[in-house]
Image (tube, rainbow over all chains, first blue to last red):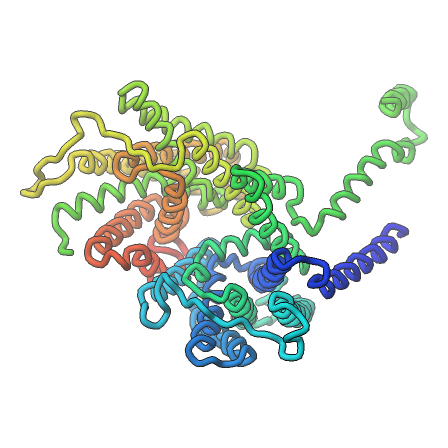
Length: 349
Length: 285
């Protein structure tokens, strides 16, 4: 009982410190770490949107980059050729993501499990191919460079461009995360978890499971497209790489390592994966192996994700405590002397 | 490109390799619900080890065997140490086997470097031969023969023996087979090891044609996943049919429209799964 009270206080302390850090980061961090942090925020949104499918609804999508890239190209084309404002381009990016989801949803949702995985992957690869071949619109493998970075107007002149875009990202990602939080905690989100656990049972209760999955798929696509649009602004560039299945795979890894089906897990996954990519590769050539080892250790030691680390530590400590101090309650009055002596031996060791 | 003898030979020899890497994956997938993303790594290990053995001993057959056994050993290690812990936890299987794939890729890059290596076929299989009036590479014809023989053996083992009946029953209803007193754990281990062996053999056999390099593992894995899913999880006949279709489409598009080659196969996969969500020969789940 005492532990949970302590845990709650501890948690609000962490959240408060984190919020304070995020708001004051431009004052604390130099330009490069700040841009890494911006990227982490964007991928947090991407991973959280994927988590709606992968973690909550149990739909293993390996094609989530299709939405990310669609949003990126929507922003790239509109900002570059029509000079539209970021509010409009990002809205169009979301609509584009929704459209892609509405069109592909009825096909992919007919499949299950591994078939779902491969079909989402295949459709993403086909989209990649179309973008690659359609040179005069998409720029083919050269992509669309020179997308002007948006700025929050009243901050121009007071902050560096990096800090300005950071705040823009922070606001958009913050609002989106809040929205996702509201969605997954709503009855709709709980029904998704029900689908993951036992779809037939939910169907039997009268839930329109197919429609729920379709809506979840569309919502996930919309948020991923928004993340992709932000990323195109962040890089000032959009290319087929942002549609690549490698990116979808990276998102999947973020979700799994951080903790699929937990709310904050994907954010931690995005943080860990991006830090691994930038930091470990900076100090050793063997970083691919190190990443591989971390994946394996993560799966074996924290199968529920890094998000469960405090809980795991508490579990292990409780287990240790039980082994050392909690032996007396197990003894029963009727036990014979021989058993008692055995227990004493155990206690001594 | 018109369908002629040459493209047929190239396509079918590629199909042989695809079948070897994907049949193990398919049965393991279907039987144990284990997603092994380290399949490409088994191919990679088989290819690299065969290359080294062939360079030391000049003995091609020995190289094939040692390459396949190296993959078998890696397969057994994966099966013994991780597989049972992660039963039915697909997401964790994905992360874990991807981690193994990363490690294997880095270790092989460390040992064999980053350049593509190509194994020379043995003397009697070098050069080209005439087949139905066309000049075709001898080694590719040999690949087709080997692939066909192995496919026949695997098909016979799984479809016509009692042991194979246990495996197929396991694909359909694992709990029921267990209740009948069949030692499923041992069957798992054997199937997994056999699949790893065939993947490694595929790598060793494929090295003279495709070469091995860091990245080969990813390409092989993606193609194997397509084949497995198109054929239908757990179906040997499905893996055979899908290997041939995927390889032929890939080969023909590669010559007719090279820019589109890398995604033609994906378009095919998408089309098949849209029409038949359970794969060509898969049963409805």
